[in-house]
Length: 286
Image (cartoon, rainbow, N blue to C red; front, side, top):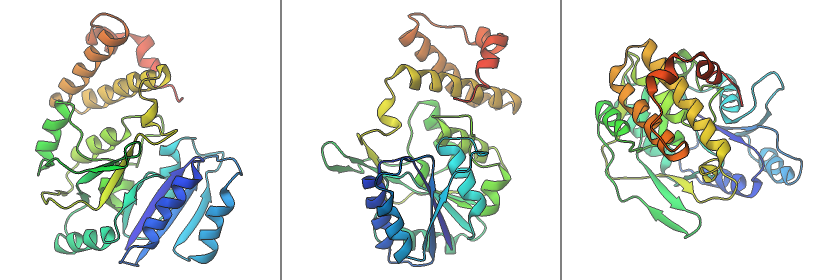
């Protein structure tokens, strides 16, 4: 039924905690594919112990031929997936025991759907608190509108993909180090496939915030800001090529915010898009 793909780079203790959440699932038809993106050897024996004692769990090491980073690891795991439905989780995500069985119930009732987007809560690692106090938009159109207002209601693990669909849109963008969720949702929503959006108040998946050494924890660093700028350029190129005018508003707003915050003035979007230097920057793989 489910192929669950988790890329990881060190942070073994959190990964082992996440593995335990899957071992506690009340639904048992799943495989867990752990893709090592270049971890050091320290602590890996704990991961191997899970593999030795549970046939559901597989360990893969990202080959040198596959681009490094979470997206490259996700795509490599995706190619190895054996089941009809794929879920990409982060290595520190939390899934409650009935998480998979509840997803199966929804899938069984909507058998013509290709992508399911479930509600996600947040777990604050620093304060040890769960937060699910929001209502997610109940349609793809409303989710798009939310993005235009810089409101993000779901994360990587919120989405359950039909295996053939995520491969049809070529999976994750290997060149992005941030905004990859937005990028893949953008490409999915521009397809003709059926997408289901959760309108319930139930939450079974939690995204961890304020966790040590996470990508999200680095959002204030100069490197992350450059990745964000580059990702926005790439998304703008895609938006322009598909004539998706509504998304241009989001990208334009991001450029204005970024330039005012980091350059001290509003950088002209039309200059960025026409300037060969910035077009070349957007193709760099960090």
